[in-house]
Amino acid sequence: MSEITNPCISCGACCAHFRVSFYWAEAQDAGGVVPTELTEPLSLLMRNMIGTNTRTPRCIALEGEIGGCVSCGIYEQRPTPCREFAMSGENGEWNEACDRARARHGLPALFHPSLPVMTESYAAAGASELPEHVQSPG
Image 1: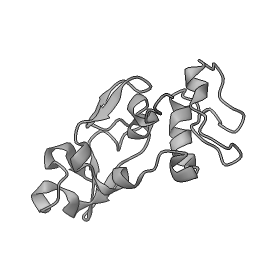
Image 2: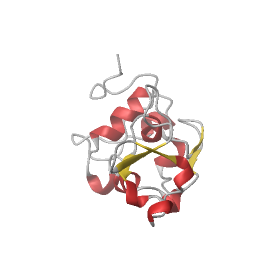
Image 3: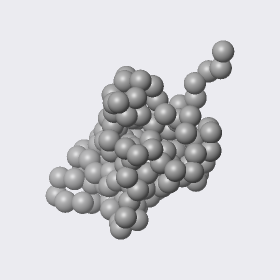
């Protein structure tokens, strides 16, 4: 029986789709754990990860190629939004934002509430089209 691999290590789409903003005190210079040099001010009380507040976001801590082999360079020190962002299908819960980020990068959805299991088999089978429930960005 084969072991299921976490799809996040071959994805990274969320790290290159959303702005990662968080309370300023999560940064090291304020007593938190997020490396200050990888953040920038967003407002008086908020910071964001460098690279995520742009028209084509990509977190400065993301290592690797989207859809290939990726990792977070500060995984143990990542901010709250990253810690709380669930992979679609985790604990049987659909995360529309995860599947939307994947679709933006041409990756298939991982899960949908109408399906009984994760749909990573689309990627393994080399599916060229996204399932009907996933909309490509226009």
